Image (cartoon, rainbow, N blue to C red; front, side, top):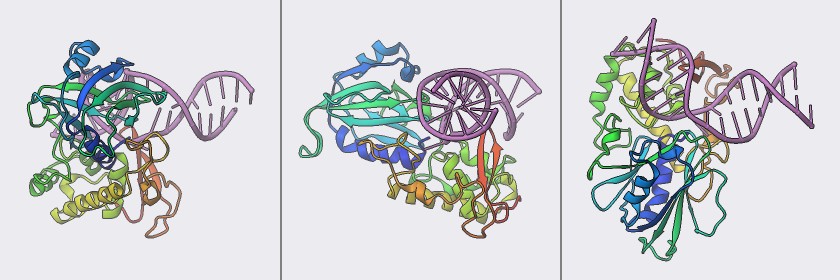
Length: 288
DNA sequence: ATCGCGACCTGGTTGC
DNA sequence: TGCAACCAGGTCGCGA
């Protein structure tokens, strides 16, 4: 569910809560979200308690909290994962899976209470947490994840070239996290609509100019979504305070099957694509 | 190299 | 009202 703008909203929300805080306790309420942890819950807890956290980082849809010995708590929200910041005495959310107690001063003691609990809440449990030993840089578990469009070190020319050399369909390339990360089904459909590209066009059939326009469309869509606090259809996606974003009001094609295209009034179509749905305008977005 | 598919999960909505 | 089928924004691994 959460794509780059939603994960970045969570990262920004967590930053002042986590930076400089000490982990005083961890409780694993369900084993599923730490399935990737070698050694299971005991090791997970042992490696976190007593550690100090730095500012959280992100690549694509992955988030990690650097810890004081060069390792990190690596997290993916999956389809329904949330990080919630609560008073430890507040009632547990129904799908709370892991609770992490923090103490010590945050950056701003007026807004960060002395004792806080960060809860990983995940209804469907496609998300996960694990301690990674990658050193200060990118956790090795996500070495295959390409830079995202918000990454200042992204080599856009190389990315355009990679896309143009591929016989894959452009929507599959946008969704492939080892090509460019952070884009999921919603923003892929939105970017393709904005750039007037049919998702089944092969990468090799697109001009460099068109690929650039498509990447710019994806970047702009995600930038606008981030400014709105992310996209949400319901309470499944929320920020660290449990609030939903407003970008769903601005979606141009996603979820608009049968409704008029906002450019040409042609009814938006929905078709199956790689085990999910694609939404597009059959007039604005012609196959290449 | 690429694709479709199933698996991993829960729960809300839809239709009979 | 009950119940089954279908749907959901992600990722991984399999076999073709």
